[in-house]
Structures are given as C-alpha cells and as structure tokens.
Length: 312
View 1 (cartoon, rainbow, N blue to C red):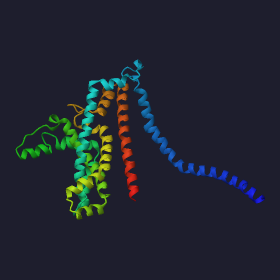
View 2: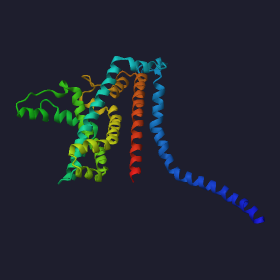
View 3: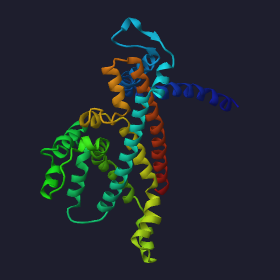
View 4: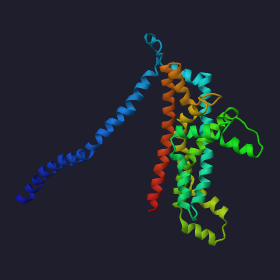
C-alpha cells in the first residue's frame, strides 16, 4: 500500500520539472527567429500602420500647418475621382490582359518543354532568362531596342519588307506596356505549369493512349483538369505582382496616353501633387486588394500541397 501511494507523488515533481524544460526548449528553438520577426514587423507593418494613419488626414506636404483629420473623405475621393477611377480601370485591364496572355503562352511553352528533345536544357534556360531581367532594364530594352521608331528592331524588320514605320508607344501605348510585361511574366507561368505537367500520372496517360485517345483528347480530359490548380496559382500570383507594377508604366510611357495604373497614380499623387493623405488612401486600397488576391493564392497553394500529400 505504501508503494502504491508514494509512486504518484514521486512522479508529480518529475512532471512539474518536465514542463518548464519543454517550454525552455521551445523558446530556445524559436529565439533565433525573433530578430527576423522584429525586422519584418519594423520594415513592413509599421510603415503600413503609418500609411493607414496618414490616409485619414487631409495632408498636403506643401502646407504642413493646414493638416486636419478628414476621416474617410480620402477614400471617398479615391473611389469617386474620375482620374483615380480611370487608373483603377487601367490597372484591371492591364492585369487581366497580361495574366491571360502569359498563361496561354506559358502553357504552350510548358507543353513544348515537357517533351524530350536535344538541347532542352539550353532552351529552358533561354526561356527563363526574361524573368530574371531587372524590371526597369526590361522596360528600357523594349523602349529603346524594340519600340524606338528610328532604330528599333520592330521598325527595322518592317523596313526590310517595305512595311510602315509606326511609333509603337504613341500609337498603342497600353498594348506596348502589356507586351513588355507578357514577355517578362511568361517564363514565370511556364515554370509553374511545367511543374504541373511533370506531376501528372503517366500511367493514366499511357492507358488513355492504349484505349485510342488522341493527343487533343488527352490534353482536354486529362491534362487540362490536372493543371486547373496550377493555372489558378499562376493567375493569382501573377495578379498580385502585376497589380503593383510600376516600372513598365513609368519607363515606357511615364503614365501618359491613358496608361497610368493605380501604383503610378499613387506615385503621381504623392510626389507631384504632394497629397500625402490621398496617396496613402490609394496605397491602402492597393494593399487591401493585394491581400485579398494573396488569400486566394494561399488557399490554392495549400490545396496543392494536400493533393500532393494525398498522392504520396
């Protein structure tokens, strides 16, 4: 009886001593991450909080003493001002056009690279190269090397065939910006879709070929449904970045000729009109839109991980 009654009491201190040790081990493993967490909060969250606070003020930097609390007036002006609404519509058009074109071209290139042929590694490297170019450098390349009406490559080729010599940026400004972005983002879509193609069940495809299915039937009924998640992921991630694009618009057209998207309008409002409150409100709306898109992207990524875990 003595042994049975003393055993639990002896085990109780051991458990009590084990809990602090486990907590110490947990904190010891998390402590190295604290500097990175503090840095991330300082660099990202504090500026956003400051921007959010400024967005509620009528604040022109040229008249700092006339600063006053405006409530939601800046947000109302962003949503009702014709120029700002036009920039929102331009942002939507730019994003949708670039994402769709990049997905279609990326899918075609991914289908090409999924086949085995000599020099596939070199071709893959060359196709990825545009995505590795600095955005400003890519925009300058298109502006001076390709679009220039006097010595650009496009007009040079048209000159040899006796075609017209248009000023591409002046005639088709929005299309010129979209083409440069499609060139830069197609490799990104290609990589995502190529990963999806290489994760297909090849036994299922071989079984379909044995049953007499054509390449188009295999693509339509097997490949395309399998790539649906990857297409969604590419569209969402591409939208996040292209919505915030500033480099191509600033470098190619300087926001003129109807190409000013919302990020460029925020820049123009802040640095040229010096309307800190209005620019901050527009910036907050851009961040909120990006967060909404990113939320859907994270859901797609998590569903992809669950599907891969289920297969394994």
